[in-house]
Length: 31
Image 1 (cartoon, one colour):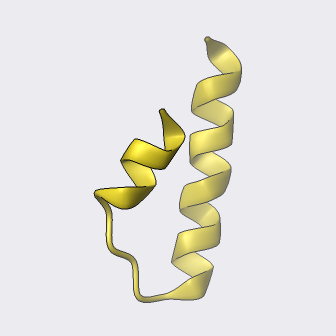
Image 2: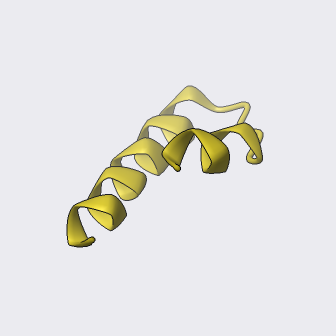
Image 3: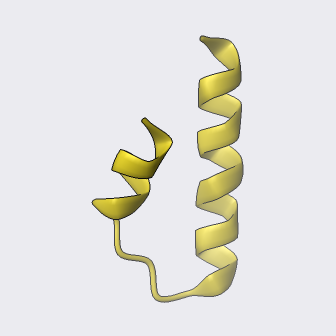
């Protein structure tokens, strides 16, 4: 599922991308 979200969001900034990945991990840990 997280691949789906990553594939549909284009982030040019590496730092923003890392922050996004961390948020995704936090979201999926709740489920």
